[in-house]
Image 1 (spheres, rainbow, N blue to C red):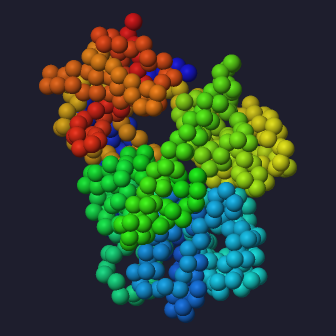
Image 2 (spheres, rainbow, N blue to C red; image 1 turned 30 degrees about the vertical axis):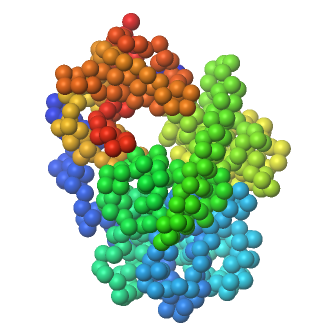
Length: 558
């Protein structure tokens, strides 16, 4: 698909002022808050969240009465990090009468389930705390109550029906919740709960200790792709500072294994290295490995887990590449459909979300993929760029197609009744034919036109003020015109990435384009003139500190 380039309205020659404008930041107060994050000023009172007082009261009662507590966390990076946050808090206050239960993605599925509750009953549990799940588990919470177990739900997903009758349901997306920011990650909700517990619990811990938990909040917030604005911006900004100083044995070993420089770890390291490898455990094996990595104090255990995650990630890459190739073959013969809806029993359900992300990046269409999930049947993942709310789309399907569905506006999951896969595709296409979809991804808007000689360390210092980058705070896009290519090379597995070098007065600067093998850029050669859209980044890969461009798109000047 050919992309249209547009230049944002230009209000200032000053780079900082222009970037503030394109982000909608106009008043002096807004500028101050954005450019100068402040922990105390930027975080909201956790007790403004609906049911937080009830949650804190019930958890404190369990702690003081030495009740058995089960931390029931989701299996993705957000859930694992949130569970580790609660684990660390209990350890810090000396509470030991708890256990962690993270379901098996392929056997148990998402959220609470009857089998797990029956196992939890045997442990003598009096309280279940769900983390990054639970908002849709009406029947399961009722079952736990029948068996004498209270439930406190800490979640951040959308409601899809009645609220479970738990002791407390803490979820900033709940209808009627007046908390000032409703896009916290699940781990963010867990962190706010710890803040509230510390305030009310009168524990003998150093004031401000909870800030050391922000490394996990940052990992979860970036990995779960929630908006990096308002409170999330503060949490990730300070969380990255904690990551740069963290003493977590597992993370320190992990950094060394995967070549991450701890002193400069950033949101890209989370998005492209840390998050995917924490997630890969549940996709290809079990999330217990990732949880152990974040909580272990043993270097040997951390080394073993890191190696295990390395091997799982290799297997994951092969699986995702295979799905991408097959989807490409299926839709290569005609126009790209309004939504890409494909599946196969041989596809591993655990990698469908990753594959859907890659397909979304390439085709810029809503993506729905399904695959075999062991004995649980057909499970699916879906992704979109914001042109539709996926939860609303899934809820429009007629009864008898999906067993269950849920998630966020941009990302969701579902399970399909046996034999209804073709009905799913037909019904979804019917829905999308009735929706007037904007052509998301077809237009790329550049923040500013710049010349290659402007891109230096001082330029980078200004861009860096806008970090951390992520959802709703994307990297600035710059338009560079009439650039003469000094060298081109392909790299990566099978030459799927491209590097284009350009000569400057004081040296060479490179532009890197990942996964651009099929973007029509392989006829670029030395001496060609091109226009390009790119962001600017600082790379210290293998200890070599350099500025470079990250390609969004390029056009050859004929």
